Length: 295
Image (tube, rainbow, N blue to C red):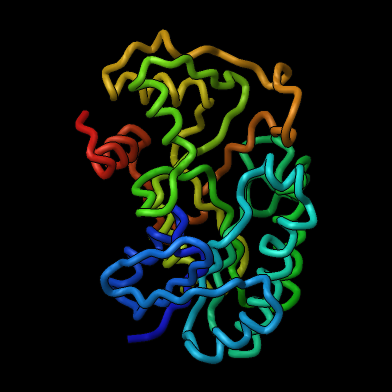
């Protein structure tokens, strides 16, 4: 079997890429602080930001393809710690592009819908980037570096993901579920729109992306929805009181990274290649089932 290198294997996305990829690849999952054990996946412990470690790891594995999921993906953290987050978000992405380019192998780089400012949705692959947060700017810089260093790389812009988090992580939805099931108020924006997608669906899209030969690919869900409406849907599926969900607005948020109002995207190009995300309700049902919650 061909060898696939997956960074960020302990995160929600990386875990699911490893779980799906092991069906047709010999998968090497790179972790740093959080150990994981997944049958059929070889775990590699490495600090990707430490000079020399990534080239050494690359030589040892000699992969036939790589998917870079590792990131400092919390916008508020990046806003507060731009120098620390730049290492993994930009420099490692560019270094991995160098290595994959020299080896002439496919490289899928995970980017984000937050490279857009949210004023002209729905966004297609050809729309110019216009990030407003440090995290979005770092990902946009990484996209430029990756394409310059490995023209055959594919930039995969993902939406918020949810689903089986593996043993060492949690998706953005886990605090929501905890609050709703324990009767705590949950404030969610009515004026922030995105196209969320299940982690397993996103993983299938990333593996598909390795076959595209390069470019940019939007891997969003099928439905544009606000955080508030998504919370209402989740509460209904959990059969809990939707009254615990409090409508909020972005203007009321005075700290942390700025948030674009609507970065919903058009993923029709990916659909034409075989990417086929289920309806949002079905994705949520699968995610809740994976968490041991019946709906």
